[in-house]
Length: 627
Image 1 (tube, rainbow, N blue to C red):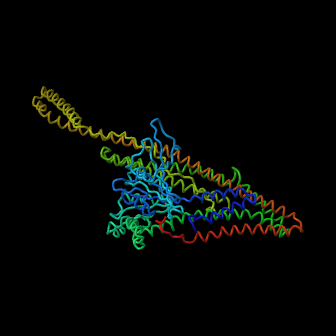
Image 2 (image 1 turned 180 degrees about the vertical axis):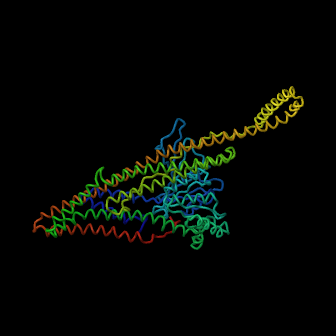
Image 3 (image 1 turned 90 degrees about the vertical axis):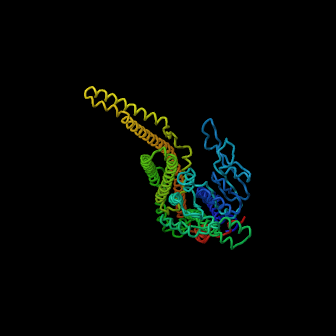
């Protein structure tokens, strides 16, 4: 592959398929090839860079593209996602959303605003002072770099901040829709508990994860830390590679043009993995899908000529061939319409899927409330609510993401099941499902701060003790006086009234504390349930919308395939029927014409088949920092 377009040969082959389908009167097949060409024309292999704060994520990206793009500072941190993709010219944009005091602003009000490059830190970091009438949702940067030219898109995310942070929630959502992730942790220490928990979730959500250990130039004991981390990953059952890198050495190697120092920085290995494993793998999947589509288009175009040629070469078996084609046409007819088996499978499958997704999410939320109840009962919200609230938000977010991952998996299985009705390899028919970042639905849902976290003041505690003491003293003084009228020695009870009142005062204070604790626990549970109910309300609506969108995608895709097959079998039957009526004098010239057409189609098919060798071959490696 030459130039900056790794899909030039695929694009050319698809263009030939469009021309052939148009020339043979098959606009339906030409439209399918056109759609694939549009998708190939916009490669997008998204790699999300995640990790805790101040681990060197922004420095890593800057070193990868050999440009000071992502802001790096000891006192500030990335606050919004920063997206880097290939562009012919260097440009920067801020994705903003207006804020209104008069009510909610619709989602379509989001705007992609061009900004000067030197303003990127103001928009991307938590220290930036931006117009209060807008909310910055992200920063996008176009950069002319060879590393990005084949479709690689790098996303610098805010620091995870542990499982109890809003940034961890956003990172989980980004992972669920990414092609790969780079998990960044510096060489100062082994993985923390929060990092291991995040990695445990990441391996379930992202198809490919590479662990990066940064700042190896600053910590001489990095090899021991790497080996410890390898042990942690092995115990987790996670076979992700650990790549050690130094952004400082990389920058110095580029400045000196020192190949040996660059090798020592570890970046060549990272670039190789990104280009040969991540980008090439995604690109090859796109190429394979296009290859299979062109082969299928060629087979459908040649079917009518094959049928006619068979009838012309053996007129005695023409009637038998026509009967076979009538049977094939009848089978294709059964694939059309609402009563088709595939349509029934799709309808029933979506119904079952809707029920299963809803049950799965309810089960997940039930586990959360059970865990939350247990945590609240075993603690005082006064002391633990500051930790409990972010735990709840992130725990719910993780379950939402996992539920959507389950939805995507089941939808793909349903697509393969429907494809089975077409008597072809289902893998070549599976649709790229339209499932968005699931954490977006959580942006407008917040835990209500309705828990009374104020502790009783010294004055209130004193009044509680006084009330209890007064009641006790009054009661036993009266009792002592009454008893003395009957048995005079019992009048001594009254002298013990102050001590008894003090004991009862302490008891009243203890009971009041228990009452307030019970009240706080009840309020905490109610707040947790209100949040879970609101999330359930939003997620159920969004997941049903997603399933309806998926159903329409599958319905339209397989309806088009059914129409294509019906058209192909109809044309083949028509050609065979006409061939049976051709006279002996015309048969020879018609055979030569058909063989020529079949040869042209075969040439296009061979071109598509030849793409397989390039798909299986190694992807080219290149320098990541060159322009």
